[in-house]
Length: 97
Image (cartoon, rainbow, N blue to C red; front, side, top):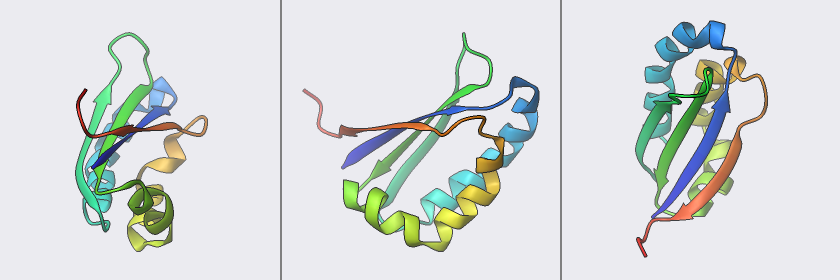
């Protein structure tokens, strides 16, 4: 398994609306092939910054399969309009050192 970490930046004034949209985003991701777990966390020291962590079976599920799915479109419909810049994404090995 691999973990996608995406730093999401939104206008802090939109935080309430964004957080209301998070369940729809979570549902879209969890319905995607290869997605095993999803969490959203808000920053405690940077208003308008969120961490999206997604557990995927492998990196291809995220980078090759997911973008072509209806779930990707639903995720974008739910939360992408809130972003003030493109998410910063990095992938991590699921195996602990």
